[in-house]
Amino acid sequence: MPYLFAHFREKLTPDGEQVHFALSRDGYQWESVNAGKPVITCQKGEKGCRDIEIVRLFGGGFIILATDLCIVRRMDENHHIDWKKAGSTGSRCISMWKSDDLVHFSDQQFISFEKYNFGCLWAPEVFFIEESREYLIYWSATVSDDAYSHMAIYCCRTKDFKSFTEPELFFSKENEVLDSHIVKIGDRYHLFYKNSGEPLMNMHAVSDRLFGEYTDDKAFEDYMNTLYRPGSYEAPTTYVLPDGKWCLMLDFFGCEKDKMGYVPFISDILGNARFKMDKEDFSFPYGFKHGRVIEISEKEYKHIYNHYNKQGE
View (cartoon, helix red, strand yellow):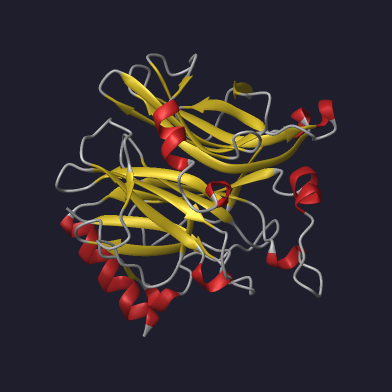
């Protein structure tokens, strides 16, 4: 069962903050395509993107979404970043591309909600609502009403990625929350998110309804608390491995820049969030940053591999 990993890279040049692809035949061993260079380079907005989302559409084709933000372009001469400013003036749109085959893409478009005065729209993801055949787009945002001081998760719906419902609050806590990821397994909705207060770590919550209420998983929290620098993990994403195991990827940033990237955690049972770190069984050509994994067909794998390897020569 082949997989595609859409992600960005941690670099001190803008070519890292673009759309990158990697492929795997088994979900464990990953290889870059296009010689590790971007498959999409942003031409509009901040001319960079982070937090790459990719979704296969119900009727065929693909959508790629990303945070319209280039942190490298916002660094000072000492590579310092004003994240507070980025959270109130950065990425006020979501970048979007459409593709039929993952080698040809539409021009960069923007999803914008200007009248809501979002300070940022970060880490967009998509959840397909089977009952209504709608797509829920959800993202991390600050708003002007509280002087951009509290990040929470907002959402809207669309059927065609052309028209969108009015944004609404999806999930909020006393602490700021960000980097959310929703997956439905059986009749339960699993929400993974980064909690920016006490406890400072990634959290897992469950609900029998998409719009909650969600109950935090204390056992998951206890395990995360055993990790080195649990507050340095973010950007959760999950997928199912060919052997039926459940893989959770968390993006670790608490180290040297060239060593940053996703760390795999495995649960033997799909839907059971008793994950354990498993670095030994996985390999990556470089650190993959905030992205998404989707399953692809053998035909799609060969098409992508052949196209980008030829392009990257």
